Length: 182
Length: 310
Image (cartoon, rainbow over the protein chains, first blue to last red):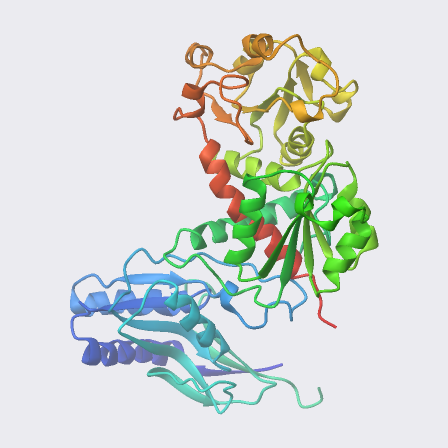
């Protein structure tokens, strides 16, 4: 497996910063907007964006976690059952602008399930999607992101991993390519 | 990722500690789901479940049906009282007829011990035991232990006494297995006539004095006297039983510590437990019922993930 860093820690920070300013451009002071991270890895994006946004805005931004396990379309196509993580949405999303967050947008199936799961909590005014990495041309469903950290062109055999200081020790995005000989 | 070690839920005896913990962890998530405005998830859209009840039930049947519906599965209900079983059809024939209507899972209650195991070996569907005679009632034991875990933080190391008709109780047997697997200490308490002869072989303490049992325990699970299974008299009268083994507010208040009171239902108020105890803040009887739906959703969800499509 060949490893290639496609976003180093310096660019990583710049990207988070840019995404925050893009969000502010659209959502102003976030009085009508809530941020929701998709379990498990979208939570890292959410935590980082939230703390940066709060620094810039000097106010608290409403946030929640959403688990999509029970809404997936590949249930029982897997060997083992999918074990859920916690959902934590203790506010009303009715008539709010919701920004869903995930680390990598690939087939779009996770987001499809996320939309389904979100609607169980009410009817938001608008739903947008923020993703750190958009794996372009790999969608199974007609879904696109509104805020993108970095767009990459990848093969199905490749894998993109967004890594975080809190978990892996360093902020970076890595592209894994299988060796040519297999 | 973890998976259940069994394909059917026949009894707690067949489960491992990991299985039980996996069920609890999954039930935690379902408990969140059933407290949302929309209490339903689409996970089991392609599963059909038959609830086959050869014995009366309110809680268990409603609880299973709600659990199934909240997972979006299709549900058919069948009760023996209004069916062709009365015309002489055998259990296997009845179930196979239901299964030819493309049913994936069967939830069955039956008055004969071993009925669920018998069925699981003979039909091509996942079987969940909702009580088989005096043998086991696994989902009740799971929800009891889950409720203890919720109330006291953990089950391991806790002392639980099961009071009453141990001889005829499937809840008692399943509870003993379940609590012991999770590391709790179990005591059974009741009149000698309602105590199975070799019960101590299961590693439980046996006590015939209610007061001493209650002083020992953290949790008291009060069972109903199963008059419908008693072909002979096991004690002189219900009133005498109640005076010896009935839990009253007075007994509860005079204990040196506060204990948790449970009851699997249906309650015979004034027999095994008085009304003021059943409705007191120490009683978690209604929480047990709420947790029952979440635990059954977890069981069905985990078993359904093992059903493979051709």
